[in-house]
Each structure stands twice: as structure tokens, then as C-alpha cells.
Length: 388
Ligand SMILES: [Zn+2]
Image (cartoon, rainbow, N blue to C red):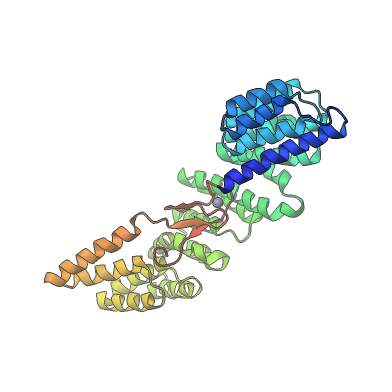
């Protein structure tokens, strides 16, 4: 209902703007071209094909009607009618004798259509043309180019464009993005065991975002690859101060590093306990539980997990508690615990573990780049009963 209302308002705005424009010029002051109403009717009757045909055939493109054509193209794009949006924008470019700046504005709109339609080559071609456009258009075209390179995973090219955008009041946003691009490059090197190259990309990443938990995570993994376990521990423990919600992402690597090093397990447990004070994550609790179990057995672990659950109840914690008791129970009690366990498993089975705090996108795996709003570092673990 709300969308429909918005839709009507937009159409009304288009119509009134167009009408005022014509009236001001003193041409046909008291009447609108019937074809215009016909086009609006087609739009309102959900017949976009006929609406587009009517507007294109009957409403000449000139400086007075440009806004109407652009509004129509924008409306179609927002509704996901990308092919029709392209037709409308291409029609403007083919038929209008507009000034240079207006033409560049239309080219930008067309590049946006191509980008959303996944026609990345065409979008890139247009955004290259706009490289010498007016400052506002140029900046918007850089943003489109950046999104193209992100989609194509052309990280080096993305870095070059983001550097052009990292000026004025958006410096922090683009510096953070550049840091992630270097992290992407580092991860590619790491996956191919090119440790030196990975190291150098990580240091670039830190140069653009000194508090990047992702850079610390990769740095630690490179250290582990080279058996520099003490260094890995030091680097991975920085994450607690950088952004403690990402500590759970570092736990497996940290456990490997402690195992390879001469550091005592008590030190690992102390660090984990200090993290728990900052972020009450069940992943951390379970990691501490694993170290207690090795030393003190199931009873001590069960007490530790139960104490934490009283303060921060989570289904994952409850499942762990049930597991600990199943191992030490027999007969009917064991059967009942098994039933309870299948319930708790079903409760969290389809639940997302991560959420973007910018657009609300939810998923089961950790991502540094939100696939929905395209922001970086906005996806975090979900806390609460069904999450961390
Ligand atoms: Zn998002």
C-alpha cells in the first residue's frame, strides 16, 4: 500500500512539474497533450511497456521534458524494470540536443542501469567516458566504477579508484574500503602460500586502517603458516581491542598458535576470560570450556558453562551443556536429554548467525563485504538467545 502511494506521488510530481513547465512557457497553457495522460494511464494500469512506448513516441526530449524522462527512467529502475529503464535513458541520448552537462547526467543514469543489470562492460565503458565530466558527475561515476571493480574482484583497480574518492568528508569510508581491498589481495596470496606477498598486502591494509581486525586475522594466519607462533598470538590478540565482536573469528587460529607455541594454556584461558568481559560470546565460552575439559573434566566444564548461561542464555550454550550431561548419564535420563538436544538443534538450524548493521542483511557465514548494501565491516555476529 505504501509503495503504491509513493508511486502515485511520484507520478503526480512528474505530471505537475511537466505541466508547470509548459504553463510557464505560455504554450498551450490550459491543456496537456492527451498522449501524456495516456502514458500516465498505462503506468498506473501496470502496463509499463505501453507507457514507455507512449512517452518515447509522443513526448519530445528537450530541456523542458528532460526531468520527466529521467524520472520515468529512475522509476522503472527502482521497480527493477531495468531493460525499460535502459530504453528510456538511451532514447534521451539518441534524440536530445541537450547541453553537455545534462548529457553526462543521462550517461550516468544509463551506467547505473547497466550496473544493476549486470552489464558491467557497458557500465565501465560509460563511466570511463565520464572521467572528464563535471565534478559532481565525475564523483558519481567513480562510485559506479568502484562498484564494478568490486563485483569483478579487480582489487588493484578498485584501490586506484577508491583513492580518488577518499577525499573530503568521505575519507574514512574509502580508507576502510581500501584496507579491505588489500586484505582481499592478501587472502588470495595466503591461499596460495605466498606468505611474503600476503605480508606486504597486510601491511598496506594496516596503513589504510590501523585498527582493522581483518588485517590482524590475516597477519596471524601468515605467521602461523611460517610457524611464528609467538608473533601470531601477539597479532591475533590485538583483535580484542580493535573490535571485540570479531574475537570469535580468531579463536581457531589462536588455538593453533597456542598449541604450536610454548605459551601455557592458562595464559590462553586468561586472555579468553578477559575477552568475555568485553563481549559475552558463547564461542569464547565454549573455547574456554574446551581448555577446562582437558584439565579438569566434564563436571568442572558443566559448572562453568551453566554459570555463564545464567547471565547470558544462548541455545548453543544449552546444547553444549546437554552434550556434557548426555556423556555422563544413562537410561531414561539419557534418552530424554537426546530428545531435548534434537529440539535445541532444530531451534538454531535455520537461524542466521550474522547481520549487517547497516541494511539488516542476514546470513549464516561471516562476510566482510555486505552482499546487499555493499558496505564493508558492517556485518557482525548476532548476539542473544539464538546467536552468540
Ligand atoms: Zn548491508
